[in-house]
Amino acid sequence: MPTDQPAYERRGETLSQTIDVGTGHTLCIQADGIRQERTGVHARVAILINGVTVAYDAMNVDKDAERTHLIGRVRKTFSQLGSTYPEAYLQKDLDLFCWGLYDAWVGQELCEYVGGTAAPSPAVEVVKDLAVEDGGTILFGPPERGKSWVLLAIAVSIEHGIPSVFDVQKRRVLFVNLERSGKSVLNRLGRVNAALGLDPTTPLHIMNRRGRTLAEIYGAVKQSVEANDIEFILLDSLTRAGLGDLNENLTGNRAVDMLNGLARGWIAIGHSPRNDDTHVYGTIMQEAGADVMVRCVSQVAPPTLGIGLFRTKGSDLAPVSSPQVIALRFDITDGLCGVQRSKLAEYPEILMAAAGDSKAEQVKSYLSQVGKATATEISDELGIERSLVHRLLTSSKDYIRLEKDGKRVYYGLADPGVAPQSTNGREEQAPF
Image 1 (cartoon, rainbow, N blue to C red):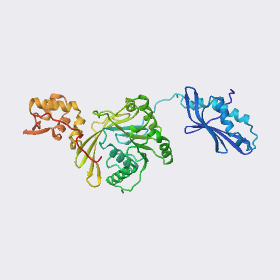
Image 2 (image 1 turned 90 degrees about the vertical axis):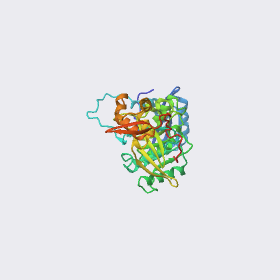
Image 3 (image 1 turned 60 degrees about the vertical axis):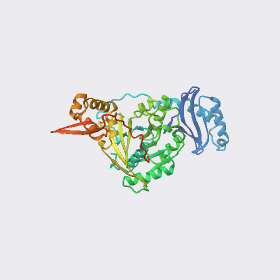
Image 4 (image 1 turned 30 degrees about the vertical axis):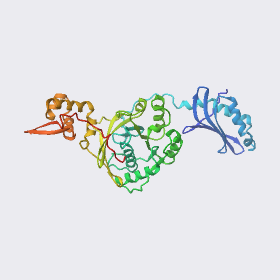
């Protein structure tokens, strides 16, 4: 094959070559979807005359028969141009274009010899402690625990730069709903808008595709992102990626890669396995691929639903010592009527999760043996932070204040004859 390779032009994921064929006409050969397969290099190749596509084919560009077939499809149109550019030239130019296509495509991915940044810049936190620009977050927890409400509240907060609940930087967002009906999401949007101080009819870019998978609508999402200058995507949910078994490593990698290729950042809801809400369901590759992982722990305390957001992973982010706690307030008639920040002490079961089962059980076990003790005594004996012990004793219904001796306050188990049980909110029901 001759070595006079074409000068490829790149636009997004498309490589092209434009040729002046004489008599005022131009011919363009372009290819996208370029990939190496077992049988050779494959791509979707199109031939355009004067900017109009006259033929295209998804083909193995290494196969002479497939290239010849594509040329045959444009022969009639090409002959009508009255060009001095003969068909043999087209055959040669298409051959050369396909010959160097893969090398030109991968050439952009060659290594670079570079130095580090002299003054590194910190990660841009689109949502403080929860989401970063040029990165992805998975918000996970059991079903029906308020994750979708939180995700929509985050979306509205980012879109309009509202810092009252989440500390956000304003970005244009797209909310992709694969879980609920369009009517349900619009009803929720109205309630969230009002709760955040906006007119209920304030719009948001939304794709409602209940029953579809992300893989099925990926092209439409990508076009929506480009057409509307979307910077951040919020997906409900990652479980509906539609790429295969979420326990397979390849599936987990592809799902995260797909989201990374759409916008400057994303937050996706994930679900935790039955009987274990400490990690997201599926392969660990989802967690490896995400930049931030946030565990969602909920407690029903009518008329509110408390939601603790525990960051369990935060690439390039400073460690956090305690979760963010959000309170969703519901009205029996109108549904959601308020969204606000709350305190960890307001929701003992979220506090217990923050303490960790082992620490909480250590405190209970110790009190069951000694009968009563102060927060300082428990802290010294068990080696647990006194502030955490104090919050447990004063916030959980499992403990009672027994007596005060000067400055020392003694606590014991609320019912020492019955082992305390925590429901983690699983036995309660709420409209979320």
